[in-house]
Image (cartoon, rainbow, N blue to C red; front, side, top):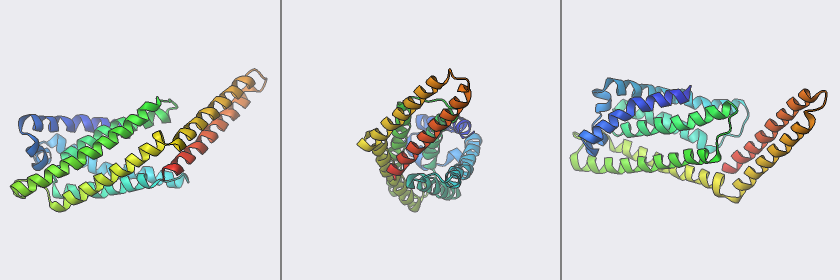
Length: 249
């Protein structure tokens, strides 16, 4: 659901940003909120983007209800994005066109990955690394856009650049904090010795239980044993996943 929504949102908002950059330049893309005031399609998907932050926050609620580990990065990211998106929409913040397009694009990849995992597919490990790398790139570009917005605001004034200094300050603080948190998550998950140890443990558990499944498959009650072993695999991998999330905190 969220993957399809994000894909559609990216396709409906990215063309406006590309058009503005090609025909009007960087200043217009950062300082003029024509994506809301003049483009009805993009304006509609901007409104949907703001509303979508509520169901995305629902991910956090489900984690709490399932009594799973809730890392700081997860709830901090969702809550701050929700507050900032609603605040920016009330101001018709011009630079938000960049943030919306980037968010739609990254989420289209991320939620598609989650959908595959939920459907019991196992995407290659580099896909997860790619998603986190995209998120880090998003944070760097977000900081850069705010630096440009600050320069344009000082040079041309609020009459020509429709963004407040308060919004710039909040946005750059938010994006920089995201960069630090996602960089820490990337290191702990993919580069640190602890992260490698957890991944090896998960692979070992999966291999052991798969071997047990094949051994028991020829017995009279092999079907029941296979089902029980599948449950064991899920339980073991859930335990490893919890250990992984605890390390990320």
